[in-house]
Length: 163
Image (tube, rainbow, N blue to C red; front, side, top):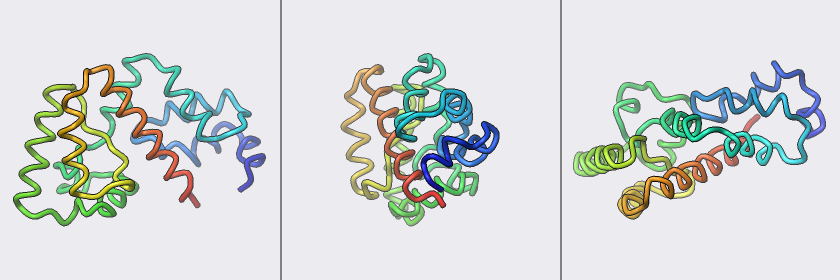
């Protein structure tokens, strides 16, 4: 589909096609649909994230699953998240690796009040806990900004591989 065709879609079709880009947060695409046309789809979508209130941004981050967490074990991840986590090897952790992820997830959630978000397609299962440990030193505002930037990368890669 060309950019022009995407911009010309009825709002409902635009939302149906792109709402899964943002983990359990179709509101981003719904708002973007009403503001079309824009020159760059990714930029237009991410502008809605930037325009959102802090509470809405936090809800967007909180909609993401913990990495190598209970949702993965229970098979409750979205198809995109399951594939992305598997691409980083998070579906094949040793018991020691799983314990480390679990401890870091708990520390991170306690400190920031939301799950750690990273574009796993740009790292691996060794790099993720290293990044988590580094980002635990961030301020809450800096970490929210980091999580939103990572969501932007996730969305960009999902757009590049969308059918």
